Length: 253
Image (cartoon, rainbow, N blue to C red; front, side, top):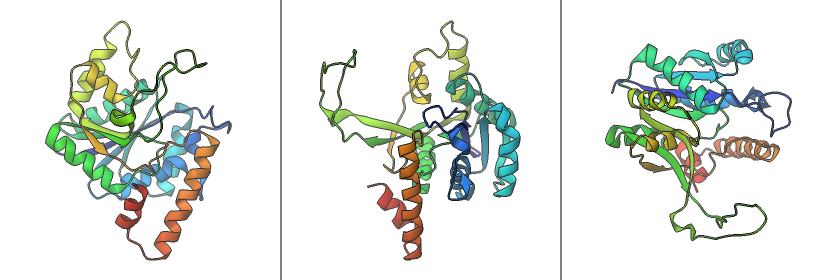
């Protein structure tokens, strides 16, 4: 495997945020959320290239911002699709066409700006070892099953429950092949929640690595407040002289 490539999908509309602009372009601490995310991959020594799938009307803006914030590993920004999986496929295809299939690809959400650098490294190592990786955290809440949303039908033990995050990482050629197999079917991406679901639907095993609980997806106004607090926490810790590893170790707890 030659390169480690990040494919970032940033096609959300921001409807749940109620902001009027896509959530990935909301500014926090002087820069858009998508730039906070891109900077983590830009600064990681093991990441070689970045591809982004973005809402078409925001591509020019993202190009300008990437130049302003010196995102030098960004190779291409492509239009997103009708669905999240369409957007991911567009980003993967751009990377595949430019870099070839014998590379590791980390698929990450543009509004997960708190991914710890060591989790990126663990994704890469797991793909080298097993061929796949999904970032997860243990599920600490009480799971409830209710088809109606009105009453509890079951409350299973949480021992075997995990929360899936991102990155989700694979061999680029293999995940492209899986996408094209699904896209050729009549029902397409119906029932496909994420890339883990997609790979399992074509018979591939997906191996888990432990993520950091601070790796939130900024989707609602409450998430935005949490992200701002996390940035302040990180700045305070750095001012006190803690290393990046010490900070990310705390975020993983």
